[in-house]
Length: 457
Image (cartoon, rainbow, N blue to C red; front, side):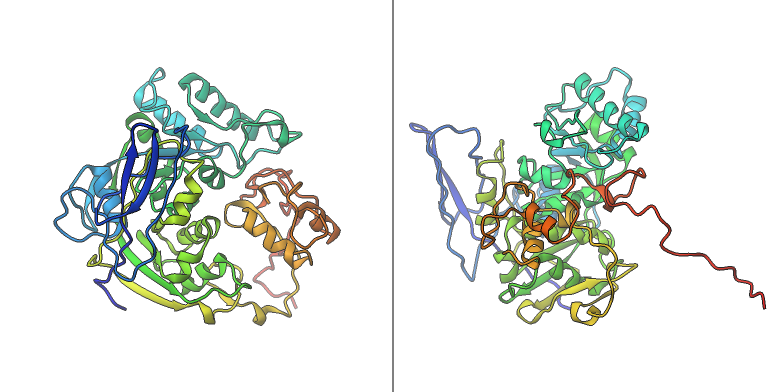
């Protein structure tokens, strides 16, 4: 494995015409780029990104003294330092904090205990509250969790609280956004160069936007709510180079399972940075899937460099300016792994571990009892469309109205039902998290039996 290798990115400069408020990004030799969002600007805005180049100058953070990886640069920016290195313990400012109905009540309790019953959060516009785990249930304690989030958000005047009140019909709740990690992206809370912390292990999903994103515990979350800062150790970075044209029968899930060769502990408290021509060809949802599963390798965070695909996605979503950063050409990486994706095959993670992988064709004789499609890893539009193709018609833009190409006008929902699937359920973490007995798709019957270690002849 090679070390001390790097990945650079094209740079751009910002031009603002004060007269007509138009904004454009054009290639230049400048090393610093700050992107203004399209959302709050009312007049003409256009972006023209630099064409892909073999040699690309990296952006820097302040007065750089030593080459840094993308994650190190984000830490340096958050710590207001010229540079940091792997292993440093630094206080970083948090750009966005997210919590949900599972860990939110506990985090709120710690915040109030440590800062006072009448304390206010450090910034009401940087706190995002998204109920999504135990939602569509009659369990009183699960419902109480959502009530606690609502009471806290109203008391604190939290700007981004995605509430749900009518559990009988999720469509009747205009503020409800479903699974938190997908909602964070769709609502513009994921932005390049920023630090996003959340009380959920799959918060690392947001690394797809070229930012540092990771999950934290309730105690840390309570401290962040009160201060907007947290002491973190700068992780070492593993570099995954994926090149080659991606076959149309593969998805990003296959890519991350390919990387699972490092085992479920191979990236413990390390950053996993994904680069290469295959990665550059992925859309944002696929990049989110890739980064979503780095926690399954023990990773602290996953990250993909922001590019024109990222900027295009954010055009009508981001409400604040953002500053992308990129790894320097001479940045030092802990290890490097290379893959020729053009030769890859579909993979399967078998029980009981994500690294217990096999080629899909090797599992052709295994009977499947239940298929669950959804949640943060596999519940994006791309995933539902891929599933619909398998049911001969080629979901959550809206699986009830989204017409599938080549299906004679049928929606994903209709295709699934005609194929014998259950009617698509209300969006939540559902079976992935388990939860109350009436959680959709949960298995409540024993699937295994326990045998006595003693033999009775």
